[in-house]
Length: 118
Image 1 (tube, rainbow, N blue to C red):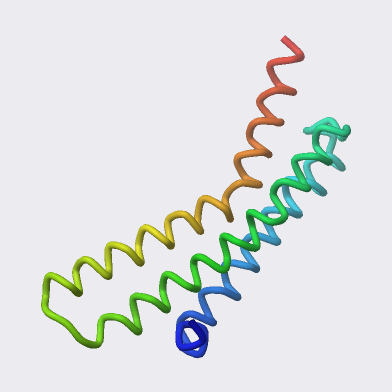
Image 2 (cartoon, rainbow, N blue to C red; image 1 turned 60 degrees about the vertical axis):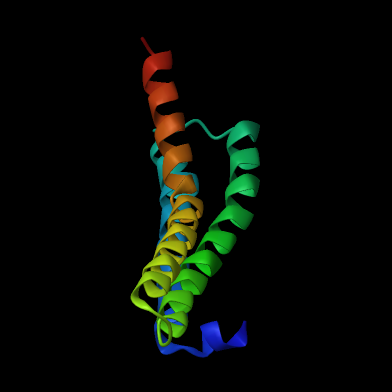
């Protein structure tokens, strides 16, 4: 397990995805309510509490997936390497879903406030 995060690419991907998640959190839960595009209420606060662990877990999964691909593709046959790459890509895809969850919440709240005015 520690071999994955000692790999330079995995550490870089983890920190990059953590930064992207923080930027999405700022847009979804700070800038949109301040601009009045999203109504700040208790529902938005509960969404924030839900996105917090998902974003951190998503950043971890992205780093783990890229580290898994980098470390595990050193040995094995072509078929085994292809399977390991697929597993690493699926892990990273789950991480991307966790990181992009604040964007989904922001879009839902934005469209709800737009259609509420009609």
